[in-house]
Image (cartoon, rainbow, N blue to C red; front, top):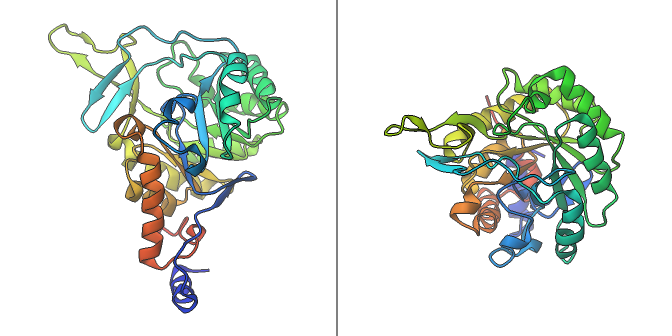
Length: 319
């Protein structure tokens, strides 16, 4: 149903509470607002500030089969309209997460999506297999795109052939909805989204952070110990919105949009461009209740526009 027809129908029926629920790869979310991996801890860290039952989904910090210490400090620096981070995917490991963190998340009726990664195809497969057997994990987000990890790890997200191999290998080891998180550091985001779709991804999320650098002009050295890091925050939003629009034209599977979402208006840009859901990241550091305020803002916008169902708004960009 088109937006104009929906508005007319709403006025006739006198409805005031719009539907915010969406479906991503078989997962039914009460609203399209998720947390972005790496910005919300393992969920429990934010539970004091955010009612997790109000979120569309909780996406936890990236996990590997073996615990990782991450990169040396300094690992974060503010930039104009954003921040650079080079955490290096520090995490407690898949097995510790299942034993120590997942029990807390089982108390909530919000889908839990676990971000995971590996240093080899085999490590990706092992992590996916272990998480797929864990009670309380509802979906997997496969991180093939971290820009601040040393070595040739980023090739998983930038080489179509290698990406095809790792996605198809993981697909054979999990029955859960599989979301592939794409790198923006490519020339054709639509083509990479298609590789993910063709090899078994149920959805794609984009974008991950953009590789950047900050320099201490007095010391003539990089500010980050890792030299480069991932740029996030409002500065990357126009790039992210454009890439979501391009990916939407290339694939049929759902898209989760992220990159610089600070308020409801930002989220609406992604949804109108074709994202089925959004993930809020850097905003969580600035305002722990950003996700809730965005959910409320989406509802207010639909009310103002006379739209009864957020799905009638998704992908309505006129170009």
